[in-house]
Image (cartoon, rainbow, N blue to C red; front, top):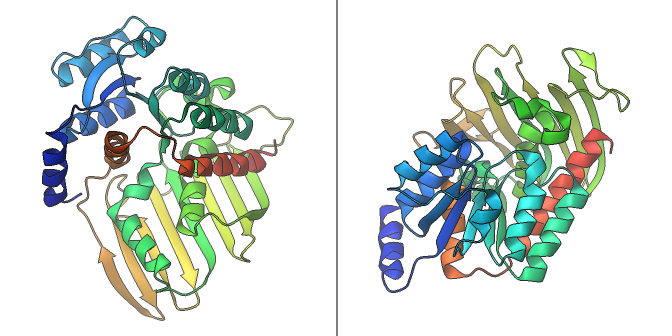
Amino acid sequence: MTRGHQAVFAQDLSVRARPRVGFLGTGWIGGRRMSAIADHGAVEVAAVFDSNPEAAAAAARRVGGAPITASWEALLRQRLDGLVIATPTALHAEQTSAALEAGLAVLCQKPLALNAAQARAVIAAAAAADRLLAVDMSYRHLHSVERVKRLVDAGEIGTIFAADLVFHNAYGPDKAWYYAPALAGGGCVIDLGVHLVDLALWMLDFPAVSAVSSRLFSQGQAVTGAVKVLEDYASVRLDLATGASVEIACSWRLSAGCDAVIRAAFYGTKGAVEIRNVDGSFYDFTAEQFRGTTRTTIDEPPDDWGGRAAVVWSEQLCRSHAYDPRIEQAAVVAGVIDQIYGR
């Protein structure tokens, strides 16, 4: 977002009241999203709740003393226009649906729900309430990704016939609930792979997925449907109705020689493009365009992108709290995740 855009947006906000937004879950991710939204200033941080009182208190101090409610249900009873949810995955569907039914717009941390059936039900609740619902798919908002998307949409690399996306995290999550199947809904696929599935389909304008195949592993052993353990490595192939093939791999605690390997490459009839992290960073990305043996850099760090999806949602809420059908893409992604897990 440019400074000029911020100035124009700020001038527009000066002539009307800012929407009041609550924050449910103010740990590391939720706190960063709250800070990004508060710093941008499009909406007012009106109230917070976290099951950890220390996290809630720290979040409230960060924004000058926002009220802390006694429960998430009490948070919904505040005079709010919207809610940002960053809680364990198993809580997303219930909390998002309750907020929508209370008349609030919602930004939910990914994934929207544990499975596709839950995701469709939440989206139906948003449509019935005519309320804005979005999922924090943060990687869509990297400058490098946005610039690659413009090249793809302009036909600069021709018809895309293949894509290769990876996300290997050398550490894995640091919260215990990520390792509880009932709370997390899965392992590295639902944690990291969801970003890759979303990015691949979004980059290609969400073509129909005609087939999904996958192999899942836990500590080097194949995970089958009968084994109730969380995968820490996954290899996935998506066959698209366009004829294109998408290869995806993701992992926790992989020996990759660095903190993280994150990459998305798209191959077309006129060339290719690649987005990748720099020197193992979780935050710095570069993008290049390839033609034969030549390469051109089209984006490089720095880029303060972590809270950009939340800021974009806050701006949209200022314009309208009405239902946005683009959220239906989240159900498509959830359906693919279900197929990866064979459920």
